[in-house]
Length: 174
Image (tube, rainbow, N blue to C red; front, side, top):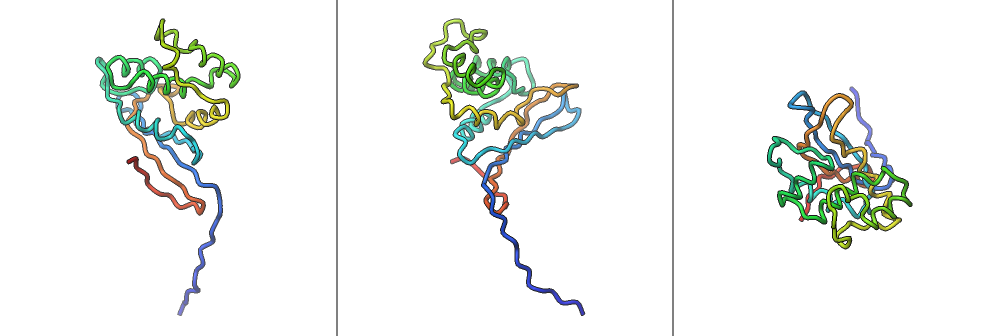
């Protein structure tokens, strides 16, 4: 007869984090693709980012949602998101086009937004502190609008909390 010893689960102590998974449809239903990003527990942008995604609906002339700068501008024009939401998402998606130092200068004077707004009130621009720039980069692996062969259509997201023992927890916003 085989007997079992008591099993003691080994506790692995690590740093807690979030896993943001964004679901995409490839082209017009040519398949699906998920992109993940590990986000720090103290990332100040998680809730805002997710709540903005919750507001997005297809815009006029499109059957789906693309997370690209041009298409986000359409969401703003149609009133789905505010100017502050647009500048936040635009900043989050485009910060890596320049070095951190250049980014902080350009975002401060609004140069990034000149193609969309000729006379944007600079007080509406999303401002990032130097120590927060790395938090923006945490989203990079999950936010895409196309692959090397086709466009991607946003279909939703999930946010999982992983505790210090590696246990995963579903999340929601109040």
